[in-house]
Amino acid sequence: MQRAHDKLIASAAKQELGSIGFVRKGRSRIWIADHFWWATVVEFQPSSWSKGSYLNVAAHWFWSLNDHLSFDFGGRVEEHIAYASDEQFAEAAVYLARRAAAEAVKLTDSFRSLSATAAILVEEERRSSTGGWMAYNAGIAAGVAGLSAEASEMFTHVLNGFASPDSVLVQAAGRMAALLDQPSDFRDMINSLIARRRDALALPILSSPPL
Picture (cartoon, rainbow, N blue to C red):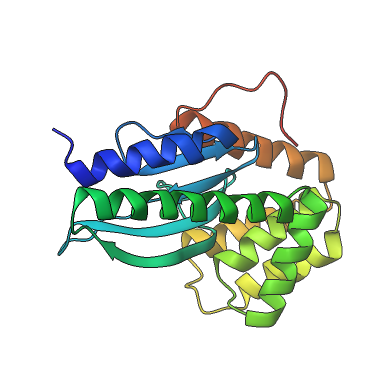
C-alpha cells in the first residue's frame, strides 16, 4: 500500500512531469524523459530516517556501461523536505515536482545536440580533470560528434587516470579510443550500446539508430 506522502509525490509528479513527457518507472519515485540517446532522470529520493523526499535531477547516457540508472550529469538539486502533514507535504510535493520540471528543461536545452553535449562534457572534464566516467562520456559524445581530437584527449584522460588498468572504465576507454579512426564502426558500437541500454530499461524500440 502506498503511503500518503508517496501518493502526494506521485500525483504532483504526474501533473508537472507527465505534461512534459516524463513517464514513471513502475511504482517507483523515478521518472524518465526519453531523448533517444539519453534520458532525463528525476528521482524523488526517500530518506531512511524520515518521511519526505530529496530531489535528484540528472542526465543518463544510454551508452552507459552501468547496470543501473546512473546519474551521469547532474544530481542533487533539493535537500530533504520532511513530511509533517498531508496539507504541508502536498505543497512540498508540488514545489519539488515544479523544481524538477524546471531543472529538466535546463538539461534538455543544454543537451540539445551531440555537439552541444560534447562541448559541455569536454569543458567539464578539462575543468575537473577527473579521468573518470565524466572523461569517458565526454570522449563518447565528442567521438560521435566527429570531434576526434577532443575524443582522443578525453580517452587519454581515462587511460592516464587513477582507475586500475583492468577496470571496466579503462578497458572501455581503450576499446573506444582504438575505434576513433573508424568513425562508422565507432558510431555503430555506440548505437549498439544505446539499443542494449534502452532494452534493459524497457524503453520503446527505435525504428532507426538514434545516432
